[in-house]
Length: 173
Image 1 (cartoon, one colour):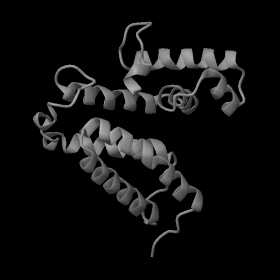
Image 2: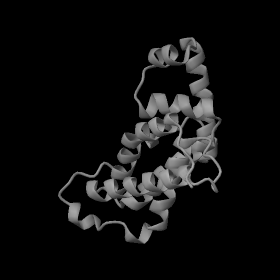
Image 3: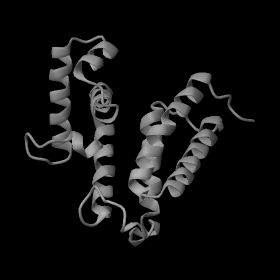
Image 4: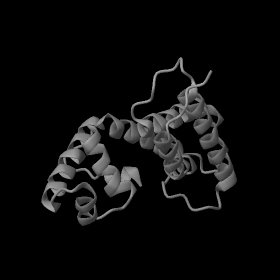
């Protein structure tokens, strides 16, 4: 017997697809491999969500991104051959594996922040919202958004052992 999935959870899972695919494409540099990996992650999540023996997932977004990072880490040796894409411009100079690991480490550090701080950083760095748009979306004043984002960035720097004032939002692009 399977556990019925609440409509809200199914909608949340569907809403995560573009973000999961974007991260997988960035990390794998191969659209087909990224789509396959995201499909695999979604199937695993769906299976877990319908299994009554498994505990419910409290934070689906964090769980999905962790599952993707873990899957990438587990198949680290099987990453696609980057020499096939030498003619494509690489946004990260040199070897991309350190950049991928740094991205995964950044996302793990982001997931370890308090939910409100992580949400504000995602709205700014990932969704590209302005401070005013974040204020409208959250119901906070723009000054409160500014100060909370500042504290969130400081906490992220601390978790990543970066010097004070080091930029952190570029790590999430």
